[in-house]
Length: 148
Image (cartoon, rainbow, N blue to C red):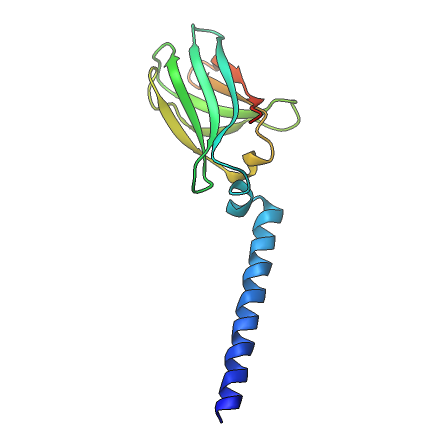
């Protein structure tokens, strides 16, 4: 009886391990959290803002945290205050659509935004500060990969 129970426990453990490996493989293939955790913590890509319709300055960076999550950070950031300012992302090579990330938190100062994990594989983005009300780009930053 104990031998049969031991076999069932071993079979259940083997199925659980196999299922976990399968799910992890799907996450990596789809660019899920496992893909973002693949690299060490630190700055993945960074660049400086340049002005568009209004003076915009500061630095933008994609940062991988110790838990594998990705953040877009602004430091030394400053632009003109306006209603309906948004943070947009666009692939640097122009292959793809602009993605609306979030409303701009503040027109000045340090801030951070959650990023989708697939950007760990494609960190070369252009960060755009966009005024939806007047349909103008306030400023942008082209991010370049940082080599550790």
